[in-house]
Image 1 (cartoon, rainbow, N blue to C red):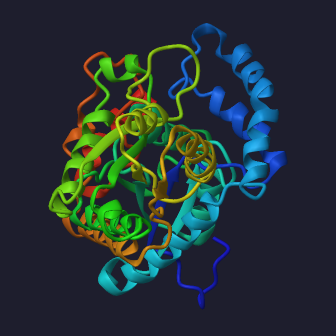
Image 2 (tube, rainbow, N blue to C red):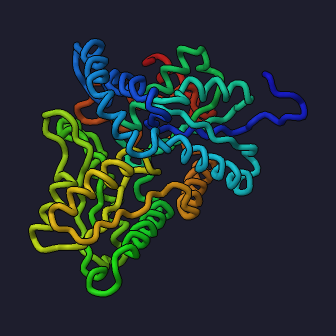
Image 3 (cartoon, rainbow, N blue to C red):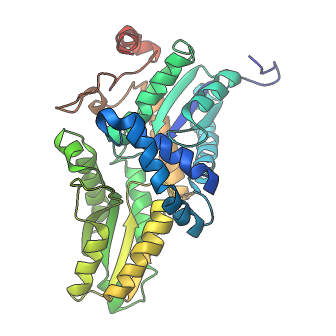
Length: 376
């Protein structure tokens, strides 16, 4: 390995799995091509290899315009780096027996890609690795796709025996996470003028939607998202009325609803004038918060008669959220957990034979290694 005696190898690597986003306008097309080429998030059937690039190329100009309106690129890489750096610092204090720790960003569709993180981990001498999904609520289209890609890349790079893995595959009800979201809601409410306006404001939780057929197949995403929303409102003592809505639909197939924009329009028509929109399920700002919520939906809300459209801040570098991330990983390391109980349960109508595998698991669970590698 390239590290020296003076450079202590990283004992525990925390791989932060997420979708990623283009850091510049020229990165938009490669990002879209990877996105539309992944049949686990957008299933185009037998035409995936030809129709995927075609759709990506057709959408590039429009999506570049959206990124242009938010500064020319996605901040998700920046925020993931910030979160990861603070996470590793806290873990070194919380869990000295597994230190030193280092967080590695592993994006599915943008740099740094999964293989880049793995190569860096090998250079750093990592021995114990935690695949930490940055999607709090599990879906086969997001967490599942990222994990499957991780195992594929380990195989392609001949690293199947390089690291001892475990997985944090979901954390929708973690108390610290719920606390951090509730704090963001409070900060959003503070943006509404005091008095009757704030007291009567409606909270609109907005989650990324999915095609209905994925949920019908047995994907747990919608129910886990609902659990998060319920616990956030419980922490807020149900101080305000609220609605859970869904955003970012593309294409013509039925998606999970109701749509966020239509909900806000409906609230306006019902006489409500003040809303607090809360992005839920996202761990940082990106195009869906900065463009879709802050520009597109905000403009539509004003036109429909909404007087106060307050968008609650995203988690980003919230100290409460960073503490939550640290606690999640610390508890995971302390228990020697391989994964959640739910991770072992495939969707009832799953058609993907590579789902729910873990390559070279941590030693107490090494009997699963042969099964995982035989599937891959």
